[in-house]
Length: 82
Image (tube, rainbow, N blue to C red; front, side, top):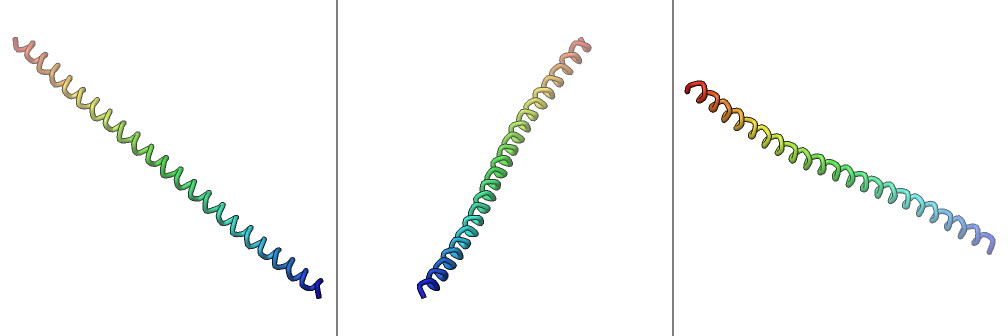
């Protein structure tokens, strides 16, 4: 009788251990996925931020170019008319 209880107890312990290991595996997988998602979100955020900065620099450069060309064009026109 004691032998039977021992076997039953061992099988219960083994079953509980297997269930705990499966649960831990799922938790690790979820943590890995969350970390990957956070990393992806940070990378996207950095890319968008850099894109906005580059667009601003491009806009300023184009504006300066347009103003310079217009001023030089009118200076040359005034010089030719004189």
